Amino acid sequence: MLGCRLSSHKGPTYVSSGCYHLIGVDVREESQVEEALGGAALDWTAPTLILSEVVLTYMETQCSDAIISWAGKRFPQSLFIMYEQIRPHDPFGRIMQNHFLKLNSALHAIRQYPDAAAQRHRFLDKGWEQCVCLDMNAFYLGLVPEEERYRMESLETFDEYEEWHQKCSHYFVLTASRGSLTAQALLTQSPGSSASPHSRSLSPPALSVQAIAICVEGLGMATSLVRPRQVLLTGGSSKGGRGAATRMLLRCQEGWTCVTVELSRDLDVRLYHTATSLPGRGVVVYGGRSSPLKPVQSLLRVSLDPSDPPSSENTDSVKLRMEEMVCTGDPPPARWRHTATLVRHCGKDFLFVFGGKNQSATVLGGGYFLCPDQQQWTEIPVDGAAPEARHSHSACSYEGGLVLFGGLNRKGMPLGDTVVLKPNVRGFTWTKMEVQPSPVPRYSHSAHVIGAKLLVVGGVWLDGPGVPGGLVINLTTHSSVEFSLDTTAVPWPLMLHSFCSELTEPEEPELLLIGGGGNCFSFGTHFNSQPVTVDLRPVLG
Image 1: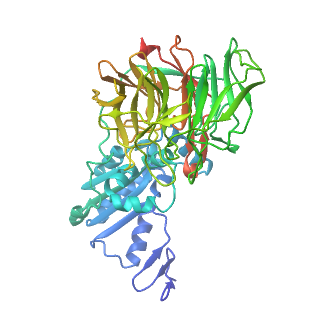
Image 2: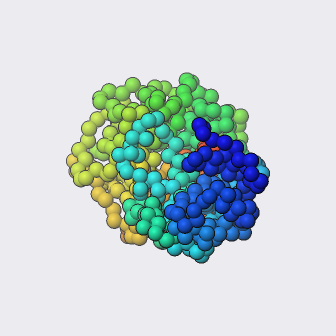
Image 3: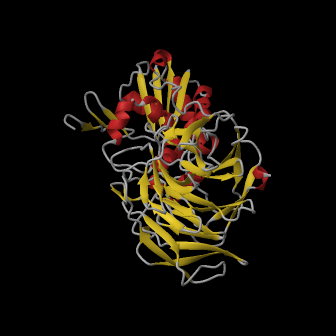
């Protein structure tokens, strides 16, 4: 820096020039700070910007509180901007705290001020006249212009939506002001963002979650129930990298076990695909990606090898036959994060593909029908307004059609709508279901239809308290109930996104959750190391 010199006066050392002073001083020592600033000829009454970017939380909370209070008193015309962490108690928050503990840099203020509301009251209680505090999801989606978001998002192909929203929900930006600068608070409370969180609290009951003592992990896998008590796991990534081995979960008298699968051909690297069971005719594996720039084009059918049918007994491996389906007709564009659901038309089964994204489209809409028996993409008339384009949603077979819920839309906002595809004389009709109370929007969840109820589990939301537990939508009365999950019996943070779930036995109200987790950015990648079960009796009885 031209024109700078190193100060030689007694006290804190600093670099100075005609218009710039860089001071090194312990901000916890009030007298030293005042002496240093005074020595630099600071005008205490001038409009002053105070910037704290992940600084105060590393010191004891009583010290950071004192600094906030001192700054409010000493600078009558000032604007304080702070960026720090919140939400310490959910799975991401626990992993985040453990990361800083390993670095011997514990986060202190997060315990006493665990959310945006507490941080706002903190500043108001310490003498600041106005304060706005937003988590980074609210800031990014509510205050950054849409065209600027699109510009930034187009710079590099991105597919880590869950991790991005999780990270942004655990950091906040705050502006507090005094004096004449209250009119220039910089931040505003945006009504179109998550700054005003969903006010509905979770309803009882809390469903019990239990871990299964087998090691199965993975992100972006797909599962399918081949037979009762037999779950096929395909694709995904794990600690060993992309292209996880195909496996089978078997339930025998001693409990669940995981066995390897011998395939007649390679599945290839495939993430965020679908595996749809065709009763008595195997499993159709469709879509997915090997990287955010490389969609998988092949369409495969996996079926039981007649020479080695799997049983519920504990075995070392299972043999399956895999063949590529060469289909006629006009196929849909390649995609991942879509759904492929079994529907019925004119006495035949069809695979209905909806939504998703690919390397050139952030979201995909429309609907495509595949007749698996004839291996043909075909057109079937669909009436009514089609649902908004989306990805990372759910779609479940229901009364010959399907029920679709949630997902992430083109603007990067979670959806909470429920739409039913109903069979009619010509083909199908889209019908939007008005559910009350309105469900909290979410994506990257799993869902199942049980009788006349849609059960939704896990996912990522921006407007709800804590993290998503579950939701039951009564498809007859159009009513909904949110519930939480009791994970105290699970010995690690349970992250329920990028996971799979299966109802292994219809007569037993138990849900099997497999895989899940995410890259917690600089905090490391977290995998759910074991499957867990959820007892559904309290919400299905």
